[in-house]
Image (cartoon, rainbow, N blue to C red; front, side, top):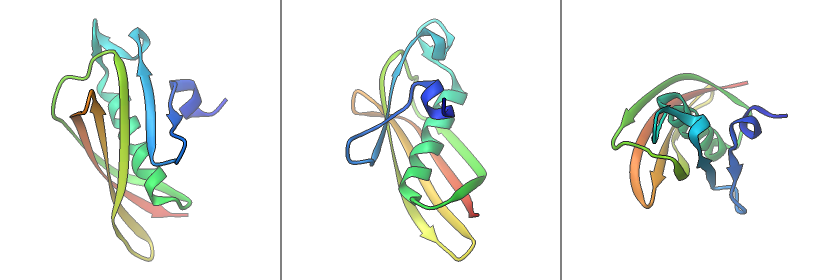
Length: 109
């Protein structure tokens, strides 16, 4: 079982969005999704956008709004790609509202 599958992450049909039905197993407090779940979801979305063999070397996450149990979706995009490093971001949304935003640096492997 893959790490993403174990967390309950699914990739959308076109591959551009990572989906999660957040449940009580993802909570840090009743009804509130754990920071680490949001960070991982944003990082996975950013890596999906990179579409290359990479490993994260740095991640910074800004929590914008409380994420609650229910549907979450994350989208990533590449900001700049160099020979060895790729800079990307991942954003996590709930009901159309931004709840978390990550800046991620990846190293090519």
